[in-house]
Amino acid sequence: MKKTFTYFLAIILIISSCKKDNTITNNNAPDYYGVSTIKVKNYINRIFIDLTGREPLDVEMDSLVILLEENNLDFPTRESIIFNLQNDTTPQANGDNFKELFYSNIYEQQKARFLEAIPDFEISQRMGIAYTGARNDSLSGNMLSYFWKKEQGDIYKDVLSSDTAYLNGSITFNELCRRMCYNGIYDIINMNSFNYVNAVFDNVFYRIPTSDEFTASYNMVEYDQADLLFGQPGSNKLDFSRIATNSIEFNDGLVTWVYRSYLSRFPTTQETFIYSTHFQTNSDLSYVIRQVMKTDEYANF
Image 1 (cartoon, rainbow, N blue to C red):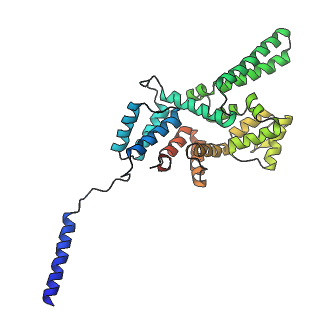
Image 2 (image 1 turned 90 degrees about the vertical axis):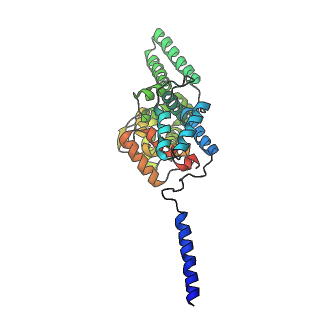
């Protein structure tokens, strides 16, 4: 019995000794161990296309792969890369300016969202027709028609200048969206006031209006009649577009647009609350996009 106990104790000591010798301290497995380089490249390619509208150059791809892998694909590194693509004004090897590309891409995305991605040259044509008609009316003394056509030309001009104005900070993202749903092209896409009101609610809020909201909106758009929408007074189509794109619910719609654009899903209630509140306070669309793009869900890690 004594020999058996001694033998058993010896085995335990040997096992314990082996475990101790093979333990390596401060050598935790990396969080993203096993993520292939091809996945890292796919992530970099995706953020380039989604932010700038182009694929990365070979030199850009190679340097960012090294940067991400050396930093264990961590969130701060991801966010710094995304931030750089949104804000860097340094001319790149091919002459690109990342900040300009980012804001131009936002502009193109909003044209796709509201105006079926109509090319700028068609907007320019409509602007030219409006200004030419205004000049002819001025020469013939038809001043009522002159002012109306000039106003239409100015509206198209505002749409075309939205990307530069947003880049320079002279307009907000809210105003950019307002311009997208207040012009003759949007009217043609969504013929008559009934369709127009429903289209604005769908494009801006991703929902249909309630009965009371529709009535108030329709009164403004169709009859130039004073009414209240979201607690704000308005009496015409321009007022309606301003109220819709400057309402608190606009922020929820913005978050929905970001999640649908970059993750192909609707945000959760918590995600909507967090980023809608942030945008309401900071008017920072870039931040919301960064928070989505740095996630494992977006990166597919």
